[in-house]
Amino acid sequence: MLPKDQLAVVLKDKFQDSFIEITEFRGMLTIHILGEEVVSLLRTLKTDPRFAFNFLANITAVDHLEMGGHARFSVVYHLLNQHEVRRIVVRAWVDEENPRLPSATPLWNTADWQEREVFDLFGIEFEGHPNLTRIMNPDYFQYHPLRKDYPLSGRGERDNFKVVKRSIGSKWQDRRSFE
Amino acid sequence: MGVDRNGKDGWLTTTVDSLANWARKNSLWPMPFGTACCGIEFMSALASRHDLARFGAEAIRFSPRQSDLMIVAGRVPIKLMPVLTRIYEQMPEPKWVISMGACASSGGVFDTYSVIQGIDNFLPVDVYLPGCPPRPEAILDGLILIQKMIKKDSLRHYKVPVEEADV
Image (tube, each protein chain N blue to C red):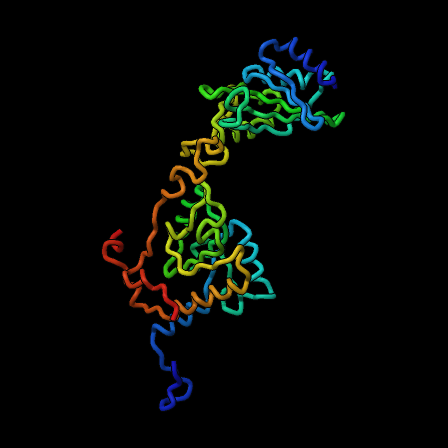
């Protein structure tokens, strides 16, 4: 694995303007990149023997609505090199207007459900995904609830169901007494 | 009920109501709708230490068609609410519902878009058990309340309204 400065030079050379920066937090490197180039970066990190990150541990996303950042959303990929036990983070920045990314499913099959989860909760679409449907919320759900502009208690989804009454006579309705 | 001293030995006089209620209240067949930790606590109420069988309710059925007491134990998310309604409708009359624990009764700490804020918004609930989760003693208490309720019932209450009988 290359040290931070060399890695930045290599990636800058390869990805030009798409590459943003490398940050470090407690020894863990984070590569920031524009969304459309993320899969070629992931492919490099997977196939290049200098990196050999063979395992995709996690995909998640962050909504930087009021936090600041390079764009509104960042999709975060945690990679693991199982031979040397090294980890690295890739942060792909996505704009608010058209949140789209290429899918990582050609590289790792495990990206399938994790990208569906990001799509369900953040509304980021992954191009080339084999089955991009909601994974946790019901299919009729209209919003993407982990976005920061979605209210915590929802927009009435939990209040709109069929009300069932007691099916037997009117005396039955007020039988709630024990003594 | 009373023993008829004047007639032949071995006769009881009673009303149809009290005989039916006596039979019903001492053999409730619960259906646990356990979705969270309350379900675990309900299991311990069934086990030997607390022993729900003392109240005649040990025959747990996981089919709504074979049970008359639904115990909703745990939080109910929006994806599960139509399922819960359907299961309630599949239970034969007469039927009773216990809403067990804070989550089923009010949503509990889960004041979020995906958790129903109390199943009594959509279902008729007979007994609420407070607690997070309620102890097995509370479950026994709730069952005894249901039994008291059944004791007050009358078969005359089971008149099906005309408009519903036509369906």
